[in-house]
Image (cartoon, rainbow, N blue to C red; front, top):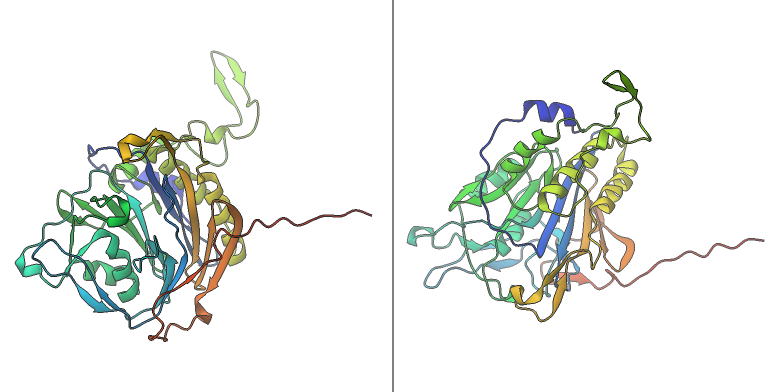
Length: 368
């Protein structure tokens, strides 16, 4: 269980980074641990354009060939591990999900990212950022394995066709079924993999800045203030919740990080069942309602106003290998039990489910 007070007390001082802003693309992810040792990861994708995402299954033994800068050679591999996750525009590259060993990856925007610059010596080990999650999910079981594997490749700034054929700045959250969690960020052309002390990710600035910023919220707590005194006057709360005074309610990356870290670190689920619904509840705190964040579409190659919304969210019970997903237009969660998925079928290739977002469950209640 994440101890907010302890984490704030031990947080090292890090230097803030100046970054550009890309406001119409936002994401949030976090981890929750149960008292009996179960580990959950969750992500919500906030975006202004519909990616037509589906729940995808990738069996073992599939061939992958990545892109590379002109005149260079991308990476090639067959995935050792099967996985499920969310795809985009019917592509085989997964934006985030969980593999059969319980390792999860999430992809989030990080304006200010500067990817690596590959050389001829890197030929055969180059890929674009959009291809990285599939590489990680298909080949590694633990955070430590991922850190070793990342040193063998170079991630270049390559355009993404279905996102305007432009380069997009991403960072990634990786967690394993033992509760270990890191960020993958490309800062000034260098790979960094900081430990995620608050088990929370948002957008810019980079993770170390967000963790330093939590020191500005050192008085946040779950108990509140019962009494206080000012100039001889005894003050008592008007209502409950005084421990959350100062907790951001805005949708900025900084606000979402602080709010998510607080709520995800405050819950104390006893077991997997409680861990699931508490993760759902925290996701609900992060949901962006369509129309609440509007922008001039001309700045993003669109006509008219555009508006963010939480396109989809997913939850991974890493310990029990269960994956849940839901869409903005359907409150129902759809579950995949990875223990029952046949990942050995190499002839079928990627399979997708069309069910996400297709249902609006309402149960009728009748009285005598």
